[in-house]
Image (cartoon, rainbow, N blue to C red; front, side):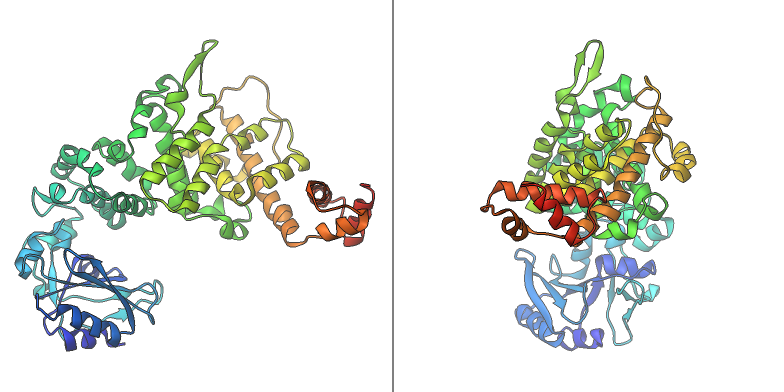
Length: 493
């Protein structure tokens, strides 16, 4: 597809702007193409004509600014946003943008050729730097690896830019200079004003970073994290004696950091990780669950017999997390997943506290958690891994998949020996889930009709109870064939 020629046929003056030009200047592939064109009465008709030429779906993304989004059907993931100059001229348009690295423009010419990057599927383009309109020094800032605001007004004009600063810096590994961080702190309270969907998407895109915990910590230092999620604010002063300076919030960010570590190199830590892929949600949703997993510890904190306890924080935390996600307009399926894993996030640890974990206990655990089993175990892995240092975890790595050994009594909650034992149990559960539970789901030896026929029962709860007993026998390896399963059914008269 000669993208440039088709654009120029309808828009002889078209300027590449925003993130696409920024990424092109960095030599990075991109899939979002932003074009700014001179205003004209026939702008909507020209955009629709361009959509037909590109065989693209087309809709108005923003009525106020007349931004139209085109999604070519033949190029998966590519999005082309076309908009008239904000303010009527290119100079005014660039002056109204957020950061200097986004306030650049390059006029498209027939010589501009977009190529497809084989690895990412995105587009690549080498802009001639001498032709780039760069009134605010964006190219210089890119070379210095820093993010600067175009003007002091950027955050007041659109408070979502507060989050976008961290998201862009995390994606491009840019420094956030002290003046910008001071401006974030000054305007942090404004983040409550924009549409919650926009706040949610910026936060989730930041969580796509391989070092998301680092950026969340910097957000907190700038006063933005608790402005976005006010329920996290009480964590900082809760259980300081338990977790050290920073309290529960320190622990929360450390759990996200351990998830960052795990997801960067999952094959090094989780057995059967390839077979778990379909059971894992998006990494960013897992990290969001980690961010909220102890949200209810402050309201549930109580001294009981001289010891700080948090009884019920998991169930209450699921309710609190659900309300936070509803406010941020998360999809219902995402809310259900996060509520389920937060509400049960102590269960794997309770299993690991037993001297041994029986097949029966594992079967019941998998049955009750269902599709949420793997997300729960992964969150629990990060939660337990937070109780040891990075070097300690590195030394444990080779032993994480060993048979769990009995523990001596009286070990403190943060004992490395206790942590190793608990993580070995998590490894055991994940392995059993793949080798036994998934196999069980794929190989049902009998069904309800078999039970009804063999035992002469009517449909009802008793049929399901018998099927569960047969599946437990199959999980334990005591029933392996259909004939054996039918024989077991007959023995349950």
